[in-house]
Image 1 (cartoon, rainbow, N blue to C red):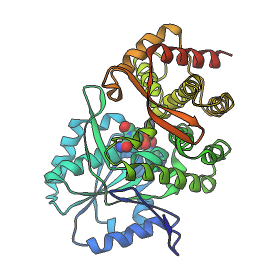
Image 2 (cartoon, rainbow, N blue to C red):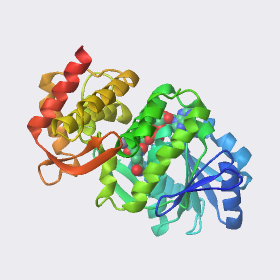
Image 3 (spheres, rainbow, N blue to C red):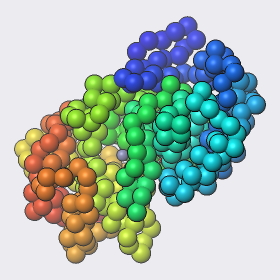
Image 4 (tube, rainbow, N blue to C red):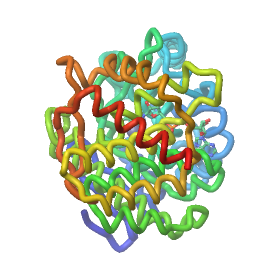
Length: 365
Ligand SMILES: NC(=O)c1ccc[n+]([C@@H]2O[C@H](COP(=O)([O-])OP(=O)(O)OC[C@H]3O[C@@H](n4cnc5c(N)ncnc54)[C@H](O)[C@@H]3O)[C@@H](O)[C@H]2O)c1
Ligand SMILES: [Zn+2]
């Protein structure tokens, strides 16, 4: 990590850099100048093109002549049909292998755009400009790209690192509180698996204060970048980032099936983290005081999600479909302490049920 006089921090995420700081869009402009003659294209969704594109163009004149491609906001854009529309669009624009795709958006746009860039003419270059908190600390970093198929998230994808990720925190001004909390869940996870002080700082942060949030975003991006740098293909260490996600994914999928309000990913993994912190205690890895602290912080930030005991069976079934449990048993990432994780801990279905009961009773109180 290095800071230049322009107050730019550059993180090494293995296959690509992540740049942050007040002048980051200026740095992007400088990066684009040697690429003159290359056709830049900007992919966004209707919200990001409305809220963020004017500011991007104001700071990055090299993109002013760029063609823009807009998709509908939401997970639905991560589809083969939308890829086809974009591939055709690139063809109509006569984009060649030298073209550069700039993705301006949340995780949907960076996942989708990265995948289109990975596949169009066997791969063109891309640059990620995340506009959600989820994007800035997680989705835009690491080179994983993909789309959904047959209701399965991220079934089709490729590793395709961008040239760089440019994190401009002021883009978050127009993002709603629920979306901010969505990304904050991944930041809390970063603290839980790697940095106890970071966890407490986030727990005590004023969410609406972007100046206060900026250094925390930088720390979270640095944790994500360091983990993917050391394990770019998810063969080991990267699994620490799955904390909260085993039970969280089951709860997320279950909520989408139900009649009630669907949960955002971060809301579901916040529940997953409470349940998996309890499991960490149950397995005698984590002490009770820290387990209780985790529950206290998360329940204060995220709305209670009401579960019935009769939901456990279906949640377990959905967890079994999860690709991370390919060998039949569950393998969890659990905590040794706040700030320290271990992965591949075997967990039984009965223990998962107990953890779900613990959460259920906790929010009933
Ligand atoms: N590749 C990875 O490693 C990785 C990691 C985590 C998540 N993801 C993926 O990321 C996706 C979720 O990303 P997300 O949470 O950013 O959701 P998103 O991209 O759907 O964005 C959420 C909403 O916020 C809007 N929005 C974006 N920026 C805005 C801004 N600055 N102001 C106002 N509105 C804005 C969007 O239009 C959208 O409606 C999922 O598809 C998930 O699979 C990928
Ligand atoms: Zn996640």
